[in-house]
Image 1 (cartoon, helix red, strand yellow):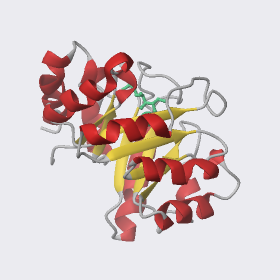
Image 2: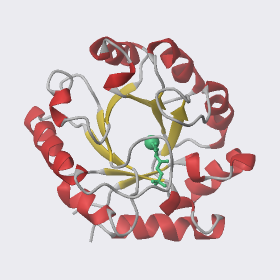
Image 3: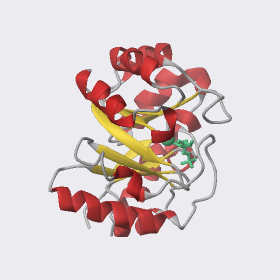
Image 4: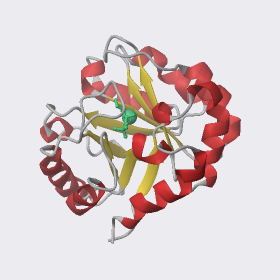
Length: 221
Ligand code: DX5
Ligand code: ZN
């Protein structure tokens, strides 16, 4: 099994020195940088907006994997694209016209992702899969880092892997929430190729980041 890409969520970084943290996790081997954007409305937590993404952009050349947990989302796509997002992922529940939202992201020259909450079925992708570049399976209810992995989502990862393979297109299958050295292998075996990891990447501080990322990659066997 090839090693997964690791997308550390900066939600678990030290917010008082985010630029430094992004540089440290980049040097430690992060493939992408996962940016969790929360609005206190779509999810019960508030994090950062486009100004912070823009401020972080000079700190790394790695792709910014921007996970928008905001509703309504359409009015903010342009700002995140201009701020330096490379992949913009939205939840289908975050607006009435998800197909149009995906077209808007692609129209801004960015890769488009769709994120499925734990209760949202894979079926939601039926009429979107041919348009998107990434599927993000939430293995926790969105809003907070450090929650426990919901094992029922493995079945959804398997189902979405089948859908992706049927398209013949290179669509990333990413898992987000409670991913650590104990849960990563099951995600990879189910068909994921990108793992978001907040707590598991940033635990122990900067001296541990490289080992944390290497340990996650090694779970692929
Ligand atoms: C949850 C976020 C996740 C979260 C992951 O709403 O989307 O990206 O930060 O954190 P861990 O890896 O600690 O579960
Ligand atoms: Zn996320």
